[in-house]
Image (cartoon, rainbow, N blue to C red; front, side, top):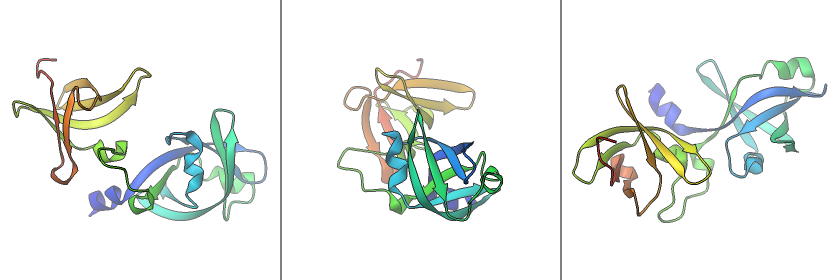
Length: 172
């Protein structure tokens, strides 16, 4: 049940600082562009193992991050309780991806097999490297870094089956 609940939420950022004395917080956003996190008016904050709905009242880009004001947090002391909390939205809040497009959150957890049917592990995360994104695929102690290049190394993504097919040598 807990795993199903975790699948319901997509982590979009993390509260990593305080801004001023009126309850504003600094948020490290995982969205691209960074200020897309402000498009969602209901945020879910993880306290312990529980997700709590919170209303975003205001927000803006600030330097390399985002600052935000949340309902019920009106001073610095109240906002300090939010430090370190993940910021998520419900999966159904996300716009549908276009054909052949995927959110990174949808790819994490997929089983990766190569074109010969050999299992290479599970997508643990994706890394943004500048040149191209990279899949971090883990199989026990073995970690593989596979360029996320659809049509070249990524042959097929079958979300309904939980599988990604890649053209990749298992010895790499």
